[in-house]
Image (cartoon, rainbow, N blue to C red; front, side, top):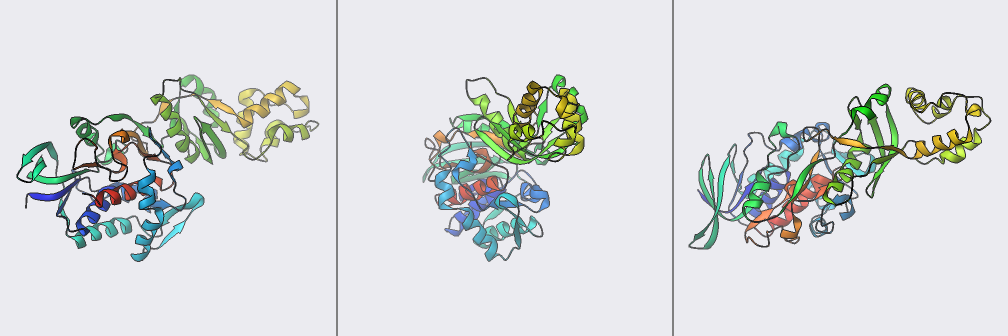
Amino acid sequence: MSSFDVIVIGAGAAGMMCAAQAAQRGRRVLLLDHGGKLGERIRISGGGRCNFTNRNVAAENYLSQNPHFCRSALTRFSQHDFIKMVERRCIPYHEREHGQLFCDDSAQDIIDMLKDACDAAGVQWAMPCTVRQVARIEGREGMRFSLATERGTFRCQSLVIASGGLAVPQIGASPFGYKLAEQFGLAVVPPKPALVPLALAPETLIPLKPLAGSSLDAATQCNGGSFRENMLLTHRGLSGPAILQISSYWQMQEYSAGKRQPIEIDLLPGINATAWLAEQRGSKARLSNLLAQHLPRRFAQEWCALFGWERPINELSKRDISAAAEALKGWVLMPSGTLGYAKAEVTLGGVDTNGLSSKSMEAKTVPGLYFIGEVVDVTGWLGGYNFQWAWSSGWVAGQFT
């Protein structure tokens, strides 16, 4: 068969969800992907256990040029709906910090659940299959899409693009979806690596080398975002969940006309550093030893040496103590960039949501053309939010294709 009601390009999280939903409605569906391994992004996520959603999903957990766009899909197919799917399948799972849900055994459980749903509904597969050209043509039943592929030509009434973004290029990420959107006249918000470690310039990094390898609880903030999680200093810059989270907000600044601002790091979250240091004012202990009560000892020692605060605290001037308190609560660092798509969890930016219907994910100016998942300008926080966007947007499109 070369003619279908629906063709979905991209057999990942969003693509399989959409294909299964459309087929369950009685549509003839073809799901194709240029890769040979099914659901590879799912397979490698969460250390192989797939952080498949979060208990606390809301539109506020997503970044977009249109922050309200994701609300409709997330409401109509929520995290609770996906959890019910997992439970009906009897997939064992557990909850970690911040409401993150992971498979007990393997991410393969999620892949198998989605594949079986597709197979049960009669979805046909074409993998691996590279799409060489997409055109919109006039047929007996009106406008249709024609796909020239390495396996021949396929036609369909509804075409769904679930091709993902540019993150993790080592498993086949490509700009296919962005180029196709532009081919049909849709705007694309320039893609950027997101949830990604941040690099520091040599002049900033060299003095921090003694701190490399340090891991600590910290709160980061930038451009309206604020997160408290683990932070890691590396030989290239900054990493760890607190940094990955804030990296998306730091990257968002490039979309505005304003100048990029640095990130601020609170090394003593939940502690009034000014009051605490004032209480220690008469102590003969070194500041680094006092800080070791709350910070890793090696980090405290090297951090104090970095600023020249190595003497006992009772020998430090009021100005030094005030400066120390200020730096502890708002250590300012300006990244020089990111470590790129190879280290990024997801892609920021994508197909401009102003050109899509939030109800159906269909392009407003190209009837029958849909975009779902990471290829769209909707980027979630770390912690299962991006998978939930894949499930929600895929489910929604599956109801209309």
